[in-house]
Structure formats: structure tokens, C-alpha cells
Length: 148
Image: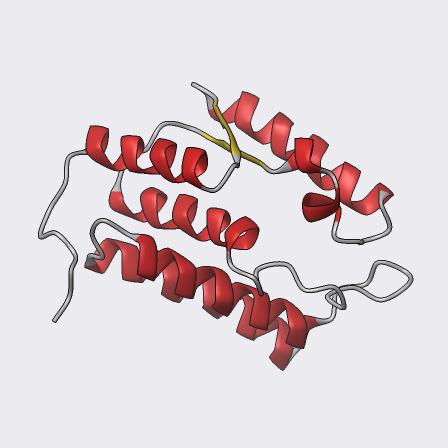
């Protein structure tokens, strides 16, 4: 039997993300526009690359940061939970996900993705078809990389 609710408002979903960030000591930055959120995410990715692919998020506490736009639908809620899972699930960031040159180990990256989605499902207020769509589309993109 699931402990998930049948429904929730967008405000409740947004508040749930806020509450989880507080509970798991993750800084939350809610950007009102995609441009601002994209710029912040790009800056973060550049720092990850500059760090040589190390566990930068776990090593530098100030960078436990989730940057997002306000929740606009259930898919976006699921993605926000999933991104939190990368910080909060013990296997959300694995030390050997990149080689010495910063090249992604796709097999390990898939394991990280699966771990983050497991965390997301476990901590979700609701898990709808929209949430499942986000998971399916996210994993499909990683599985394409394995096949290539």
C-alpha cells in the first residue's frame, strides 16, 4: 500500500521541495525565469568540469544547491525531486562516475540516475503518470548513451 497522496496543488508541491531542501541541507534557489535558472546551472556545470569531475557537490558544502524555476507541473516536480536525489541518496553521486580526464562512465552515471530516481519516488508527496513520464524520459536518454 502506498503512502502517497492522490493529488496536491502546485503550491503544495513547491513547498514540499522547500521542506526537503531544508531537511537535507540543500540550498534552494528558485529563479523566476528559465534564463536565470539556465545561467546558474551552466555556472555550476562549469565548476564541476573545473573540479576534474570529483565529488564537488559533496566536498564543497556551499555548492549543495538546487536551482530551479517554480514548480509548474507534476513532471517538473518529479525532476526537482530527482535532482535532490543526486544530493541526498548515498549513491546519487558516485566517486568513479568520471575518469581522470572528466569523461563520464555511462554505466556508473546510469546507476547514479537510478539511485536519484529511487530517492525521488520514496520522498514524493504524489507519484502520478506525469511523474513517471519524467522518470521514463530521463532514463531513456541515459540508456541511449549506453547503446551508442
